[in-house]
Length: 426
Ligand code: PA5
Image 1: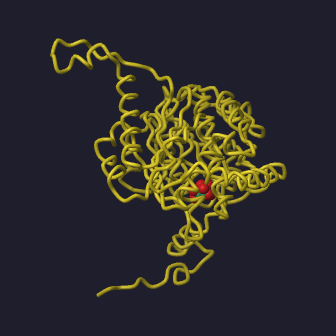
Image 2: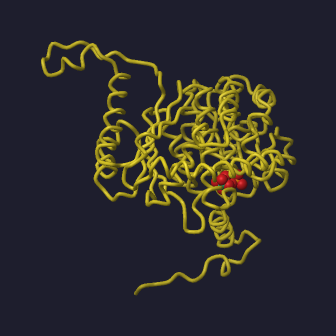
């Protein structure tokens, strides 16, 4: 992963090279803490060890039992869904890959109508094994399979933690189970048994994803000037301190649209604590040049824009034309056009003093995606260290889960305690 900070400096909010040099001492200390956490496999820090601890062969063995499915359905939510969505979209698949995370009845009913139930592998993922959305969706899907005469136990793979309702259900029906690795919070679990099975089912080279992550791990160092991931995390933190409360993630590759969603979860749920944290915004180049760019360029001076692109991509030629006004397009290609749009946006933001960072990978392939995902996780952890927040907890998310269970009579909390009386204005 390559990170270019040139346009992040001396813009508005103003961050100088000298300020980054001063911050670098704290980056070195933070790097030491991170390395200690990794050595102890401490909660959260263990995520950065996944390139060494994950077993791609075990993932492949777990999916090999399903021969040639037409579709894969990932049932999970948050960190138990967005990684799979990101990998499936970024790497592409001959399978139909679906993710069922929300519990919108219209979406669930529509999906069940289109899904080839007898030819679908269901990968149900919940670290806690208790998440209401995931378990409800799974109960619905397995009943639909049973109603269609499909032996759902033969079509289901479970990834879960050591205990919980999902573990109990898997044990009762003797389902194949992959363990969620210890010490890895949901939003840091993409490079594990949580999301890799979908890539394996789609026939992708899981080892190459892990190799990419390992290459990025090898670039972590005690100076932001030597580590692309830490350069990005430290810069985001420094800019937030100076007023860039919004970070717009804008990949120039449609296959990275879900990556922006994954990034938004990583950033928001990890860093939104103690009244700090950058609010992630999601955009897509070049589409959002025709909408959100207006705000980024000329709206409140509270933004950093992160532009992501592959250095190489598949291409489509633009046909020649004898129309004078279009001659500059004819004979060119869509990749050249998209790259010109990228550079135009970068220049446009720089000209208006909006800080922006360029992040590149060689290609959106297994290795490139491994680098990018690992790099963003390391960046997030560095940011959390510098901001002094508890990167690996999510008390607000847990509050919501508990409250919803309380309202539904879920057992461990009373409805009145779970959700206080709603305030009314009139
Ligand atoms: O990052 C997180 O911790 C959350 O987004 C969880 O992944 C999400 O709430 C789902 O939890 P679980 O995997 O326990 O079902």
